[in-house]
Amino acid sequence: QELVKLKQAEQLEFLPIFYWAALSSLTPQQVASACVPWRAVPKETQVQALQLHMEDTSAPSDSVLRTVEALWDKDPPEALLLERLLQAWIYNSFDLSEDGKQAGVIFFA
Image 1 (cartoon, rainbow, N blue to C red):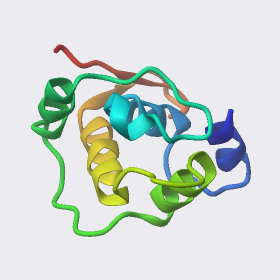
Image 2 (spheres, one colour):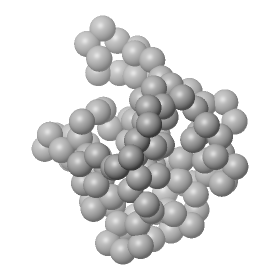
Image 3 (spheres, rainbow, N blue to C red):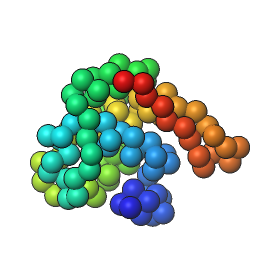
Image 4 (cartoon, helix red, strand yellow):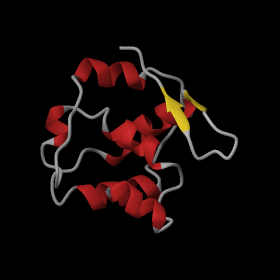
């Protein structure tokens, strides 16, 4: 819901599904302090996601910083980690539509 609001406010560079995939790749410890925690993954799954192809990223994007700000009041995960997870899903997904509004995200753990 927060991601959709951010997208509608033109605060996200990519579709909300990519941010959700990245957020869903966080561990229970990283999600625990979120305003509304969600289902997380084991550390091993996160490590596997980070092994997927992505461009080198040295700093979090404004979109990721806004996402962290919207979902955590305190003790957020490292924004650069979330950026790297976001990039992993962007570079390892495919379009499902011609208008670019749907994307497929698949990860075999």
